[in-house]
Amino acid sequence: MISRELALQLRDVGLVWHPESGDRFQLDLPSHVEADVEADTFTVSDMTIETHRYPTGTILGFNGTTEWALDSVAIADAVWLPREDQLRELLRATFRGLRRLPDAFEVEIELDGATRRFEHPDPAEAYGLALLALIERTR
Image (tube, rainbow, N blue to C red; front, side):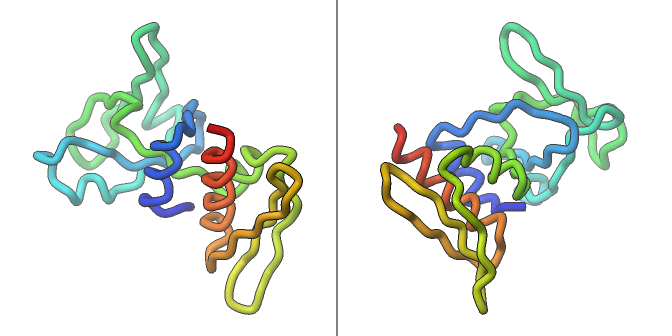
């Protein structure tokens, strides 16, 4: 799972989330809400947190099994924490490989005919950094 900071960067550059069962997320609520609530990680599931799509937007509905009272939250108030496989899939045809280095993982992509490499101790974070570069380049 990528860091909250990288997830926020990806969202800010335009990564759009279409919630599916198994997706993980954290809340991104107004500053008057307790910060520890935002540290909790939730998983979209048909049993506990369901996605409801309406013409006005997508809502994540909490089905009463969470530790605190929350009926629903707008998708705009959630931060998607994509998995490694989701990040790799989002890189699409630019993805060239993942290598294990002595102290890190290296994701290699091709952008505009040039090879770019992104290193991080966590492979998901390396994929996320590569995706961030891809999105920023195509904006």
